[in-house]
Amino acid sequence: MPPEYTPEFEARVQAWVEARLKPKRIPHVRGVVETADWMAQLYAPTERMRVRLAAWIHDAAKHLPDDELKRLAELHQLLISEGEKAVPMLLHGAVGYLLAAQEFGLDDPQIQSACAFHTTGDPTMTATDMIVYVADLIEPTRDFPGVEELRTEARRSLEGVTLMATDFTLRYLIDRGKYIDPRPVFLHNRLIQAGVRS
Ligand SMILES: [Fe+2]
Ligand SMILES: [Fe+2]
Image (tube, rainbow, N blue to C red):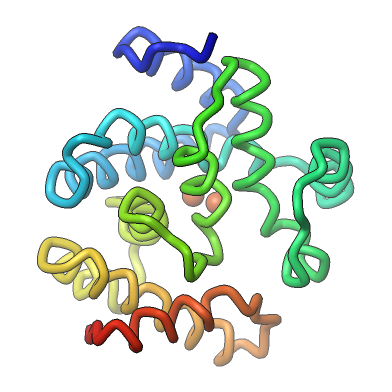
């Protein structure tokens, strides 16, 4: 039986996640939960608990080495994208969900996709996925040029801030000569074709 999403369950998930994280990452994850929570109240009020759980779980596998991420992904027969083959770190969201699912008996495609898409985005993203993706970038401990504009847009439009966050990440990767997973490019195109402007 999948668990009931009660505050007691959330507290168990939080304790499990925090035991897996390096102490310096805990403020980030708490910040993602806090930000995802106010965004859920604006954009997905019925999904608030699910969003909070995804936010807790999103980085649960962040500290696993590349070969362990690949091994777990293969073991669980995850579809491994071209980008994830090139940069196994991109698997940490999907693998984090798998570990939590195993630990707590979760069977929740919405929490799964929110975790799996939090780093790259994806053209199929739902509102819940977008909330965790954006919250990961703008939570209160983040401090980079442009973060205030993202926070302002996050209060105005979920799709608008998702486009802004995607374009910000693409520019960052281009400027540094980094590998680009194709999914944020597809996400950018989906939002532009839907008439979203940031
Ligand atoms: Fe992450
Ligand atoms: Fe994160």
